[in-house]
Image (cartoon, rainbow, N blue to C red; front, top):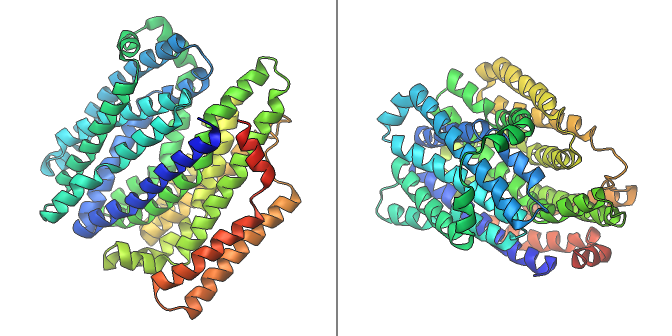
Length: 474
């Protein structure tokens, strides 16, 4: 399937994902207390800790190693790395249970914690593997099932008036199980099972590369989650719930803005490897792919951010409890956050392609130290709004550090002056349309009916015919 048709299908699937994401968040946030929502988010934080640190950086290793290899070699690398990830994740889970067993047992969530953890490791790696094989539609279908199929059982629990933290986890596990069944059904299970085993020589080879990247994964995790740990120390589950509510929307916007990069990554990774192998003509194609992905990701990110923050209070009335109105200050602090995240991850992808990974742990360590130190300084006085501000500032520092490492001649993705001015004009139109709409048009939905078409037309400033031609050539 051509890249444009593939992207169209992937885009539609992501629209479904982004349509259901706010609904699930609304159902959970409206039916749990703020403290329960904070507990739910805290358990997700703990699962993230295990799946980040105890997978030993092998996800990054696979990204660098698997694309472009023969199918047998792909399964060899994937099976052996997955075995290591599962084994060490169980060890990490046991450590967390020893630490947090009181909270998990009191809430009746111990079994849910273990099951959710295993599904996260398995499904994430299988979906990533599908992406390495350019099965972007399969990857997107299973990602939507994995992340949003729990909407259906959640609705059932809502109708039964049984939405609690345990039933939310039951709903999520249903989606995880369906996704895993689909992924296994379309995989070469014979090859997968044959390679899902310990291999000492492989472990030595892979861990030499992946272990330094554990610090990168851990740095990424701390960038996003350190504030919650410090809120837990100085605050309560209510504070975590308020922070997590505001943060979740900006994390969703970041994921939406990364859509182009997620879709194009297997293509430009393979093109770059071809150039490294001696195909001089592949470099121009590689840079065209990079530039298209970079520019349109910024368009998506910026456009959604403008609409969201300028209508935040109306959105909160629709999606949350009255208590969540207090998150407006945290929301404004988080506005640049998805952009800084995008710049960080985009530059990190290029550094991994280049093999320039030694400085990644240092950069993430510096950003994490800044994050933790400033959180300890500000959170006791200013609470979760300070945690939001620190998250944004630390990702801004990380983006600046990483960008210093991608100024090589083969990375020509930055926009020229005219393209920057066109992008500024696009955002100016969006800001003006939203400001005037808020001033003159009463009613949220009526205002959106007027503003959204203006936003669509303003895309003509940034969409280029040559970019469509580049996309068709993939």
